[in-house]
Length: 308
Image 1 (cartoon, rainbow, N blue to C red):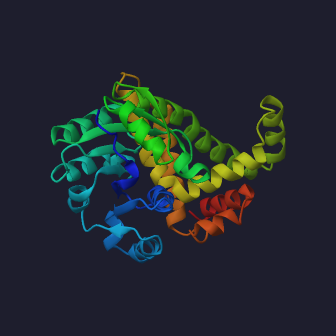
Image 2: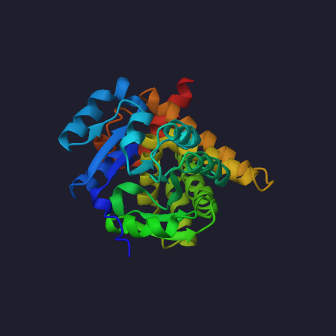
Image 3: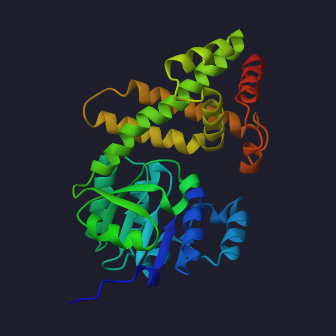
């Protein structure tokens, strides 16, 4: 009987060294798992912080997708949604035969199937992953749904590494469909709260609106939830907008016009554009945590609208 592989002896490659990639790197390195990472920003203005993080946690940095893929036993692709297929293509040229490829990206079922065809066609083993909530509070144990022919086998290996991985289906696209349909609601709520609360603030009726929401949905602390939504969109609106564009594509794939998703993507991107101009002050994530009042951010938006 063949002894199952020990995933803690793997060389794990992380494509994408943003918030999610760095969290995974930290938690894997705590277990002395070898980690290599690549990010297109390694050659840009943000490379200093990435190099500093990699040095602190003893993460090797690869010069390209192909260089990372050539040495990896297991690859996690955690990039912006629009790049999911492109990353699969970039890795396929050098991927090792039998190397696992976990697509962590918030892409449509159609995009996942296209990426799978590329990786499997090159000799890799593609599994789709759907991250079901925000990563930072849960870190490596964020609820993760897997899909594809190798999902069951990979799930056992991921659990051994500390992931909270469960199989959604042996059919590709099911896990991502769950994620995308959930995002219609969650990312849509973020956009609606920003629009509703900012407009209420402009008319001076925010307290009445929050009181009414509390009556209708007593299980939600709307003050706290509103602050959380504002800050997450300010900090991650660009990434969220790309995800919701994939959500809209998911809706289109069934023949339904994605009116709500398109509006959500536009609002998320609009907030990201404001953040890039410095309207909300520093983009340091620690600074966001120290400013939990959504009214402050709404006032900044309203002030910017007056200036426009």
